Amino acid sequence: MSKTAGLIASVLVILLGTTVLAQAPGKPAERKATDKASPMLAQRITGKVTQVDQAGLTFTIAAKGKQKVFIVSNFRTLPRVGEMIDVEYTDPGTGGPLQATTVKSTKSNTSE
Image (cartoon, rainbow, N blue to C red):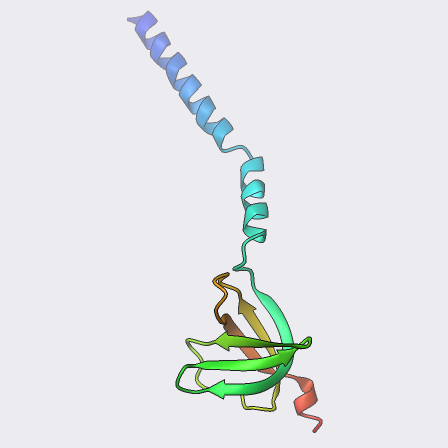
């Protein structure tokens, strides 16, 4: 019976060793590099609000010479037309509106 117990112990060591090697420290770092390439990373932009659609919960800003459309889902209020804002957003990569996560009025609004 000791040969059987030794064989079982050897198999367990091999299985556990394989499991530990499969979870090597390099694996999570590789996964993070892939995540960084994802279009869902938070980005930030500053621009002037040019349009607001209260019914559609969208707003458009002019920034860096382009018009960018944002959609919001959990905001109490939308920004006002003409307001300079900082928008933090994610790009779902579908070609549709960008998903605004935070909107803050810029300092340039307070000096006017």
